[in-house]
Length: 287
Ligand code: SF4
Image (cartoon, rainbow, N blue to C red):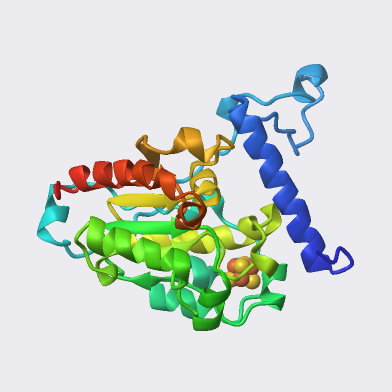
């Protein structure tokens, strides 16, 4: 990141601040002292004024407006508990996201608002932005880590060897079609040499994923691998301990499992992924 560029510098600062706040949150901190900006009356105790302010003194935040209701899904989705639409971006929004991105009502609008995105340094080496593919009303969304070489060249997620394995899991294991589900990644541009995405890149791109999930509102998310699981769950717990257990992402059931690329290197662990997928199928009433 070029810190001489004011935009990059500001992004670096906000990314660092976000990570600092997340680390505090993981340690159980639920609030921070807020300094009053008003000059207090002389009669007030200055010592008390220079520290925390009382909760009752803080401005009340208005509840975010609900998004528009959407038409019902397939019959299996009718079993899903009703979930009120939740404006997820309000919780992980980014300073550089223009109002049209927040206001996007469809995936097409969101993609259009991304344009030739240059919000992080991954834009320099990409061929295509790999936004996502599948059913915009999917019950089930798979979230991976980042595009690889094949995905970068084709502009579609999970089309290389790992993608073929994911397709087999969906078609042979789950007896579903690839177009029935939605598939995307945490970051939408290929990291050079397929390295892991870096924290500032994840922070820059994450609001797109959040907005995608807000628009699709699936019933179940399957997080593929460490970065997807840890990003969505705001956790640093290893995937080996996250997988196989139901978690919740903004009221949506989330099952972390191992990334297909890992399975290519460690085929003996396919049975673990199959256990996780079976849990998903049971929840969907397909097993
Ligand atoms: S990875 Fe995401 S934030 Fe970074 S340039 Fe690509 S689309 Fe933009």
